[in-house]
Image (cartoon, rainbow, N blue to C red; front, side, top):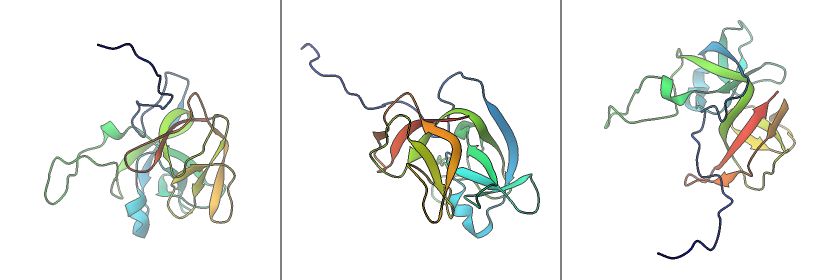
Length: 167
């Protein structure tokens, strides 16, 4: 057995949507109501309140109606697929009651490389997908939300695992 000669700086643990550390947190319950955008009801994405009621949320959405990040992927029933009834998935159907993180630290998947500790977080209005930097057209900056603790690391799915803090 040889002696270790290098140390990887990549974040190698964490599940998207899981709370990252035992820090104070604020969560709310809500019901998914994305309609035609239900394909974006994915754990770890940003959700906004529906315009008609504060108990319904949809993936992405308009500025100023941010409800939280969809969390706790292990708490929802397995819906499976047509070929595998026990297949796991981070995708949830409309009508599912979920938990959204409004304050705390959570593992998420970012869409692009190059993020650094302290970078701001924004979401795509159409999908709720998260990324780092400053929002532009079709995106909304999440107030008081930054990358913390680790530099984002690449995943096999071409995304970048990160820990973000919402305060």
